[in-house]
Amino acid sequence: AQSVSQHNHHVILSEAASLELGCNYSYGGTVNLFWYVQYPGQHLQLLLKYFSGDPLVKGIKGFEAEFIKSKFSFNLRKPSVQWSDTAEYFCAASSGNTGKLIFGQGTTLQVKP
Amino acid sequence: DTAVSQTPKYLVTQMGNDKSIKCEQNLGHDTMYWYKQDSKKFLKIMFSYNNKELIINETVPNRFSPKSPDKAHLNLHINSLELGDSAVYFCASSQAGTSWKEQYFGPGTRLTVT
Image 1: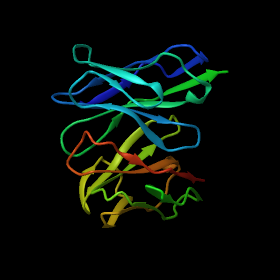
Image 2: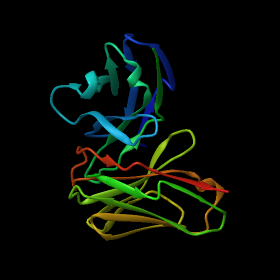
Image 3: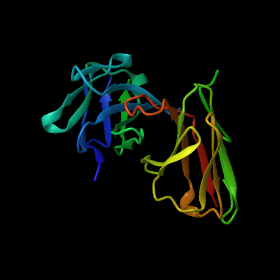
């Protein structure tokens, strides 16, 4: 069955620390991968996505993610987090033509000033 | 110029009632979705419509009935509400036939069933 898992449920960092959030997927065939962010009280916004080409993708606000096919992973990174990065982060995957997104469990990131 | 809007933002109701949540998108997208986010913030797709046609129905109880009067609207009607229906419901839209396209999400409707 198709699934997405995020290893870190709650991460607490100090400002300027580096961030890496893990995401693994289980899909047969071609997969499209996404990271969405949900700031407190707001709707989900796309941070970045991968569907083909360069496996290192850059997104908004200094985030990047690397698609490693052999590890079925799509980890999110940021070299230096800010207090404003405090949010929920969701990894998601889709395939085929329906656009059906399967989400991971989400990671709560708390950045201390 | 809100892209995906939902009404109401908050909905508090009693068990057994029937309620509706409305969703509208002004992005010109052909595909719309409903997701449910539970108390643990886990997001799960419920339905998807492509140009008013149902294309995804994820084993949701038949008390939930989506209705798409046109491709810019996807409403969710819930009959005989139960405590377990309490959640945040998100509407989303994207361009059709392209699963790698970004989905744009609405602000969510927090439903509380008492």
